[in-house]
Length: 65
Image (cartoon, rainbow, N blue to C red; front, side, top):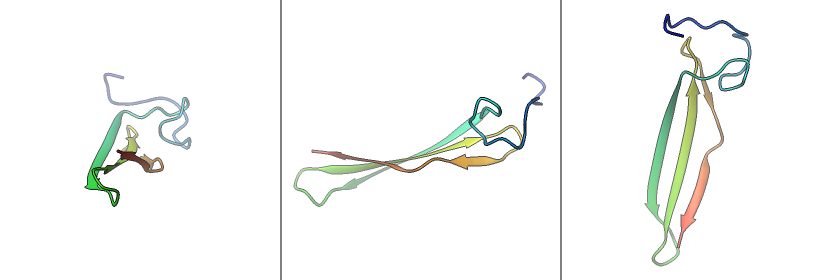
């Protein structure tokens, strides 16, 4: 994909076999949890297609004790 152009089904969702993502955007959040000596971590993920379209996946939450 050196030319930046991609063949395939552009109506398909970004991040699928039919229309793979060319980039990702990740956001990690860390906060104190309500439980003593614990932290909460959230992970937000988005795939970016070659035409700039984004597809977001559900936020993942983790609690570290």
